[in-house]
Amino acid sequence: MLVQLVEIPGLIEGASEGRGGARPLLGVLRGADAILFCHDASAPVEELRAVMAEVAEAEIERPAVIAATKSDEADGAALRAAFPELRVVEVSVLDDASIEQLREIIWQLTGLMRVYLRDDQHPMSLIRSTTTSAHAARERGSGDPQRASRVNRSGAGTSSRTVTP
Image (cartoon, rainbow, N blue to C red; front, side, top):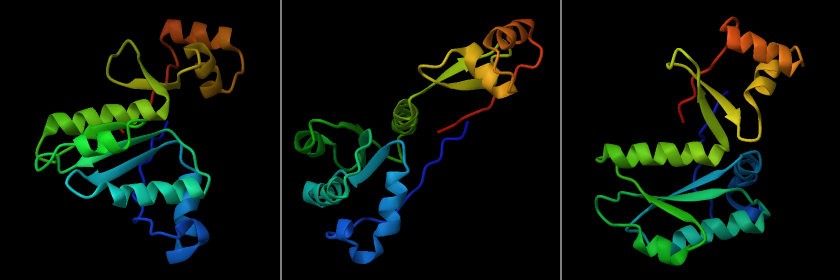
């Protein structure tokens, strides 16, 4: 399982109409499973509102979270007030706990869950509505969840991939 984070340059007003070479940037967002809007906590919210308006104008709707960056200098209160429908997480590169919280929130945005196998070192990543035996069957290409479940219980042939968002 691969979780890929892509940083794209800021969108400008008119991006949804093709201004500023934005079509490729909007294409990246169309292919995304979720959007993390990063915004300086001390910057005017109107800047972020303009970016979000361009995304909405391009008819891109994805689960989203706002990262209020530089939270060591300002809090995310203005962003929370301006965007009550979105979760706002305060982040500072000077605060390891805030970085870890952001990692967990990004993980939640993926819609995946971690399943730790007996070795307790290599988690398997599953889509929340998937059973472990169905996932194992898909991984092994057998298409038989019962067989894959037996293989998993025996400990033979278990596979896992480490995912670190």
